[in-house]
Length: 69
Image 1 (cartoon, rainbow, N blue to C red):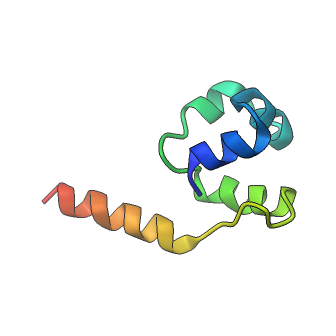
Image 2: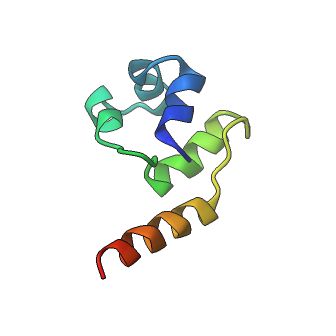
């Protein structure tokens, strides 16, 4: 789940943080992808409007693994 999609859905980093009951600073630290644990929770909170896709995380890990060779 891409961080930009979450921020767009909720309208802002602070709104996303409030919905997840975490700090805005935590949202700011996410990077390109929302941490997987949070992504699962976001899917549940949004009633499936935002989907957790494990394949995105696998691709991201593979991409970074190949880049470190």
